[in-house]
Figure 1 (cartoon, rainbow, N blue to C red):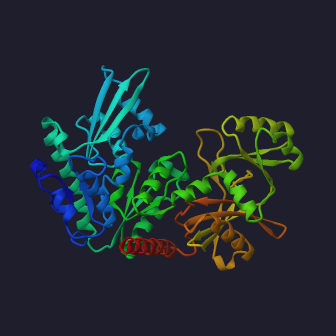
Figure 2 (cartoon, rainbow, N blue to C red):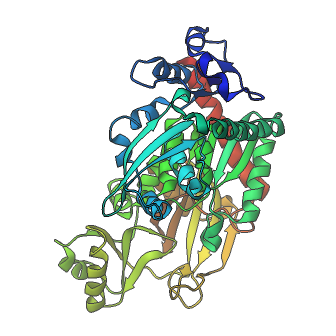
Figure 3 (cartoon, one colour):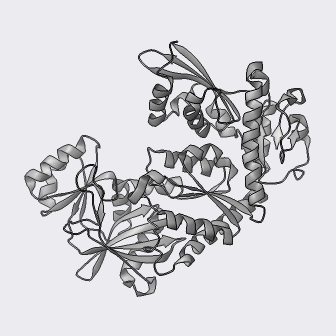
Length: 488
């Protein structure tokens, strides 16, 4: 649905898109437009309590997806938008605008596009961050280019010499939507699977597993589409988001998860799980308070760094708070090595984890979904190395140890029990819990959001059933979400 003033009919009509005047939209009965409809708000003003503001507000109240939504409208007020620009986007701004000879520049973004192809990537990134049909960004240059203002604009603010481009951009945008709808007419819901093909061997899921996810989703009535970071401007087209890209807090995966959740979408992994699992210091405190067995652990800082050697025997393990895939985790062999590593790690973080070293031939990885164990793997250490992944020297491919997957029922009951206890402290999403076995006892090493799901490894026992269970969980969550929306 496209909401626009009747005087702005120069944009044209689009197949599968109903055009309606804002007054008519606001006065229409609550049930006259379907829930889940995408409402493109092109009103002449988004000011607080204006017609445009209320179009987005009431659309959300009616269970529809407003573009822009009220959160975006608020983000684009005053200087709030400037503070939301992430570091990677700052770098892209410099690269995209470096050839300009002026000290000020206005970038218009129409349905995610700009009239100049050289700014197309910047336009897409800004559209992904601020999802509104028509946007305007003002930049100035001092020592470097800086964003000075951002606003959602109305159709009557589009210069006449840009109008044909805007109409064409809208046509391309809605044509993509129409094609998707035609292809997916037998499905109930839409899902975005966020992945990064450039991650290679470190990706949470390989290509074969991703294809199995799409196939399993279709059987559950979900039309799943693989998207990348460049496609996140289309996020509100979907009912659910499944993140299959390595997550981090200061990263687009977290921002995408947060925006999807704010829009009422079902998200795995949700932003809170990413926050909790991404920081080893948080996990150490959480597991300790819940009395979950772990190796002897110290939260180290400059004030107690001298005490680490006395409390832990050598070798011991040091972990950066945001370490992943065995990266940012080192083994200190003696006191001198420990001091050197501590100094190195403290240059990046005020806190870090110092932990007792437990030598084992493998780690258990227990996969948890909806607070139930769904797979159990033995991740063996890489050949000649003390971790499951040996990253070697910079620029070389990591080497992994072999993996064995067992039915959950045959895995050690204590391993599954401590894994469930740890994962349930995080939430009810999809987690991978690493557990070590020593002298018949089991110790939780960490809880991972976004665990690996690779073809022939984690799915070796359940095979396609593993992916079906995941998609069944998504279907159930989407239906609950929609029931909640209907009851409001």
